[in-house]
Image 1: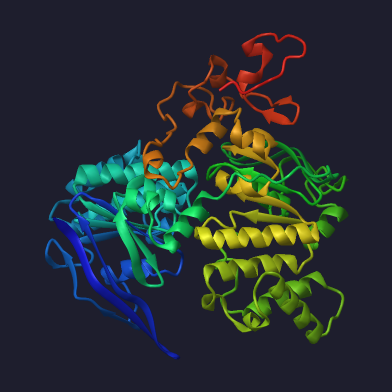
Image 2 (image 1 turned 180 degrees about the vertical axis):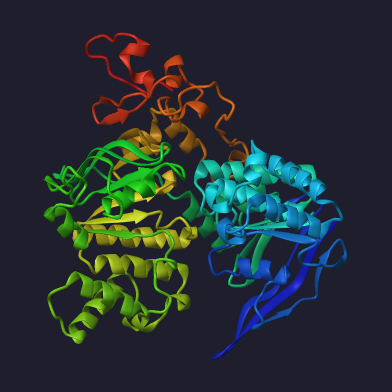
Length: 593
């Protein structure tokens, strides 16, 4: 029996240039207790279909359909259908505590007292995986991690008591480990509430892990549909085959290159916020012209480290050297070397391409502003600056005409190209890409990655590539550093680390990667931190001890130091002679997990 049935849905937008067809006779259905999926690239019409079904499209849209029914009757958005959006922070009220948001939603949809609504809210938080619902009820959204906020958004959706839940890119901005947790949570919610779920995503691995039936969308049309096994193992359309090929990628690792001198070197760098958040005792070096990867879950300290390197944050302890010269004095003030470096030698490409651009400035104005900052003290003619702006636009695959466009007129991929162009116009020696491609679909991500690597090689720019996606990292970097909750877990050659992990945390990250194959993706299980673990001094214990299946007695009592073997470093007691015994001369260390 079909719970949700959509037939011949078409959407047009009234624009100044006439009518724009966005959806063209789209039809799909979701059966009772089923998880169905819609997959396609950005701009294919997936989100428009979701907004049309839920009645949330803007007034300039003309929506036509033969039917949008729930249980055989016209759908009532807000009552029959609940939506879980991609950005959980924007879908929750930042000024209202989680408990109040849940209680208000519950009382709108059922007749009950405040006490009953509060009890129901705690039940929903428990259902969505919160270990301490009473505490979370008293917290604001900004006090929760990305994964926790997405759980809270799911709880709010369930408070509507919907027959159908639509999840629109619910895990796109989450790291692999948290993504697996959220997907298993959605599966559990469907099983326990008997609701139906429509999962919308550009990620083929996510669709493979959860959906029993799949619709493939391209340019506003459903071009192929069938069971998950048919779509993933026997695709008919070339577009579907291309999506699968781009998702699988390759296990390409950059070839070894001549070892260059260090460009940037960190020595025992620490930057803490309170006693728990931040980075602790980080040492690494980035060589001239290389792509160095930094990986870890959300909250592992990747962005904090990037902000320290760009001068936004000042380290509490440790040294940072640029070409051998100190960038800070002992009291944390920038040296002249540091000031010169941060005037343009280190540039950053951000994850949120739209949020990093001024919506009131055209592309040309944004690049011109960056150029004037670089050439401060030197008066360059407007025509000369315009020429440089057009050159960098062409370098990043755009045209000079794009200089007159505003951010809202550009696609996600085009906006990310502008972010790269703005960084390159400063002529940097080190480019920091902080999750720059995580929100892009696989085809656009592949294009952007090839563009970045081509520019990096041509201009011999060093690149710190920050990502939680190890499948992407293994295609771009030769060396890698894994961060675990603010501490270094493992470093080494990317090929070695990704094919033969030494640290249990690295192994967990690799096992959380969802392949675009239903039979394999469905077998991947989540790893949770044990909140009821034995009482230990959390400041001195190993940061991964709550999730580690290899934990020793000492892991609960102190942090491991970093042990080095050749090009590999790992912070794990499994590699210490003190805990595992004396080794014979000439012993060659291998993975202990």
